Length: 135
Image (cartoon, rainbow, N blue to C red; front, side):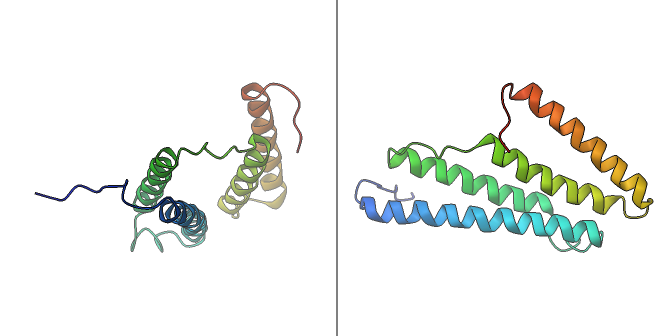
């Protein structure tokens, strides 16, 4: 019924270009998702009334699966990530989202909750990744 895709006939260079473009698309999609989250936090209903956040996540998941497929086809090792840098970036984004959600509270209370959440994140990180932390 449908012709089967034959990846053996596609050159390695074209597969490598598609692999790199999928990585670029993943960066743009994640950036768009973070901006959509900030927009939804500032004006609730602005993003969700036009585009569901779950749709963005489905596209991100499809992109990740395509990257995984191409890395297997190209016999490449997956990219190694640094848990310290990832945790620091996650802490920064979560801190901004938490601070934004508590804008109606007093500034002192907001900072106290933010510091408390940061300490909880730090101890959780120490529990999951025992050893030295190199921020």
